[in-house]
Amino acid sequence: MLLDLVFPRSCVVCGTGGAVLCDGCEARLERLGSPCCDRCGAPTAWPVERCRECAGRRIAFARARAAVAYDDTAKRLVGAWKERGRRTLASLAAELVEGAVARPRAHTITFVPADHDRLLKRGHNPAERLAVALASRWQLPAVALLERAPGRAPQKGLTLVERRRNVRGVFSPRDAVPATVVLVDDVYTSGATVSAAASALRKGGARRVEVVTFARAVR
Ligand SMILES: [Zn+2]
Ligand SMILES: [Zn+2]
Image (cartoon, rainbow, N blue to C red; front, side, top):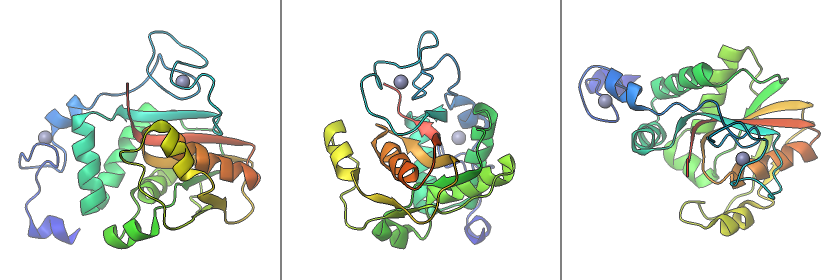
């Protein structure tokens, strides 16, 4: 990218010169794997079907998986990826996802559409770029299957109940949706956004939706 030519490359997490993510910071990212909750992907002491975080909740996706914990290192990486829009970071994120998450058995890969205002401000949707990068690694077609209604408040700073209410009815299917879909977002926080998006995909005809994100909040 042009920016990389103008500014010398330095680690977006710690500022060390050389690579966009230095070896030390890459090693510091906490990889998520097993054991975890089969449904929502929360790390657990032993494999479980549902966990404290997702038990008793109505969740529209079949399972959710993420590559790394959303800790301070991941937050800085995602922040730079969102705000500076570096394509190299989307492909780096895809590489980390591929290393941590088994390729879902699905027909299509799609993404959580960005809020219109934020899309204008940033000029890109990180979830879309991650989906496109994953699509080429997983040999799946990347298709924009969802629309997002404008004018909702950002999820940041809201409680779980508020988050669920805030995203209710925000997403709708654009077209006929394939039976099995991978739904991509950059970060899984409460699961409210991806669940609302998965619900819209199911309304559009999906029977099974698997969520894949780069990072996941770990409580
Ligand atoms: Zn670093
Ligand atoms: Zn769970």
